[in-house]
Length: 83
Image (cartoon, rainbow, N blue to C red):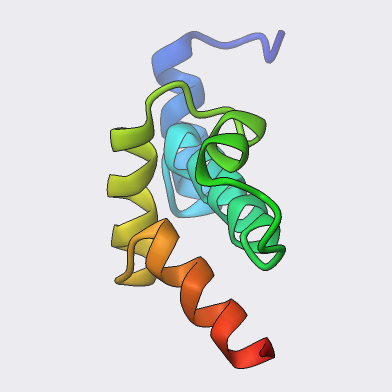
């Protein structure tokens, strides 16, 4: 679609965006997950599936790397501030 090879696309994307396409997509997904976790009625499973992750441990790993906290701890902390 972009009229270039996959490897060239990845290279151009990284040069323009400062991250790989996969990292960009995961960042967007994690930002959506963070917003969803603000609602205590959303379960972790519901959040990671809705955000496009098929594997909870991969979701947890990426979330922890971004927020220095597990999704459950993040949700608990946010909801404790509200109450």
